[in-house]
Image (cartoon, rainbow, N blue to C red; front, side):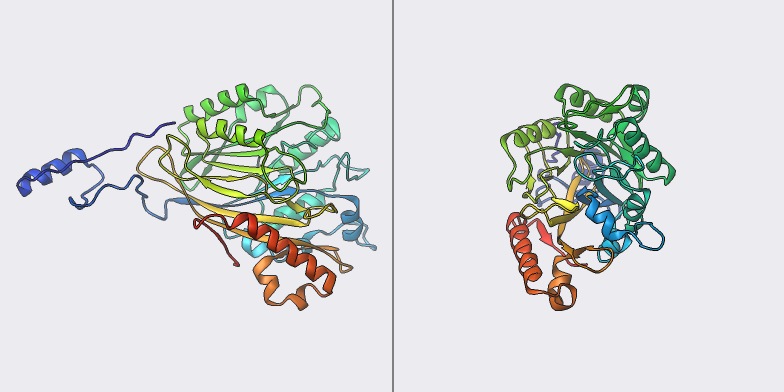
Length: 388
């Protein structure tokens, strides 16, 4: 969507004339007559919404076994997120790709995931308040899995989107309109496929279908939203860079009005970029892949993940500015201590490495993860690593 930039041309004239011109043509207040108008002017800094977003939350059976209490038989996952919990709770919106189902027993990992409720509870207690469900494992356990995810999210009153009980529910609730701090933000969520398992009737999963997505964008705009965020499951597994298909889809999303693209599925970190698409007057942000949030995958660099933070600020024009872009690289540390898996933020861990990750081999793996993630992310002076 193109933006119309207001321009005020002040010519030499008596002060009264200049003031009158400003009142007529500049309803937002006076500005210095000898200073060119900036292309994008931010409003009050308090008029903003903050985000933390991350990648794939998966539960393989070794995670379940490690977290299971031998006395109660209940898996306790909370300690996995001890070091991220204080970080997550600093933002208004905390989004994760929930890449399993809550279909009940028998619990299972790959290839058809089903986790206990305690797995989701731990993510919510860690701070996540938005689950996106459209991914290639959404249909793993059929109707029971889809219904389980939706019932759970509704019961704990967290935001969610991407899968639906029927077409009427999708029509009524999609695009998801997030209303927070006076903002209306459309959240779109879709996946490239569901592993050749179709959603059983009448359930629906959002796919990457440009005709349908164009309609979804138009519906979002008809709601007069302040911003549009797309959480998308795409790309090739284990590849360090986005492929041509991802780039073509991103171009489509920019043209249709996306402000931020949140990418998942490759299970490894891919670069993050700040872009200014043709016809746009403000920055846009794409995270090609944030890697895994948590899993038991063993392929190289699948133990790397990201928390990406950003702020949406309103401007005097029709689109917001994406600002304060920051990231925290973290490492999935496996050890014998319950619950067996810990997510270790980069800078915090480096300050006391021997305490947090004893053992030379694990320390070397942690260091290689940090080097790889930082190389992919330190690509712009608008993106910075933070500790918190």
